[in-house]
Image (tube, rainbow, N blue to C red; front, side, top):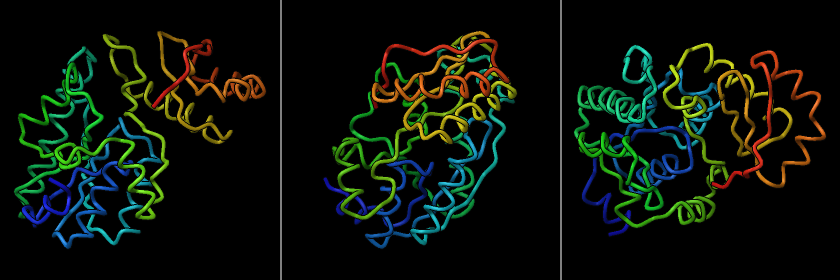
Length: 249
């Protein structure tokens, strides 16, 4: 099956939309094949402001119908306690909220941007998605992350080379309670690194230490900007370290 065939069978869909590479491509393809589609963005403490702004801008550029839903993910203790299965409960809450809103809007089918490169094993969030019968057309059509980037570039989408981004909760060590102030600190630290020109990186919180994970080619940039980075990040952390294991997508 290809996407054209998929959308010939599904003419009215809701799409879980993050503004990332996969969901932007999926939404663009739905509109390309004249499907009645509405995108749903869940705004929570786990999403940084720039992701929300990206989602708004990309949906507008596509001429898509976008609905923003605010969700307090930390009200669920299963999420807040940050155990190994945190992602399962978080995805249950997010997809469940979207499904309810979509059905109220007359959409019975919910799609997401999971692709064929995403591994299903040991990913609790995938289990939640399957339980709620969320459909992943990119995965069903065998499209990998590399395929989607290539096709996005061919379609002229600005997201074709956008770095992958995971939610802010992933910066907090498992079994450590997630606090709103820690998420805010993480977002501010990462915003600062972005302002210095860093791309595809993470600032992880290990107790009261910030651990920077960057691409191999950015190691020198960290050293060059060491004083500025230390000054800014020590507003939020007691110490700052650089992870010698490089980031890969």
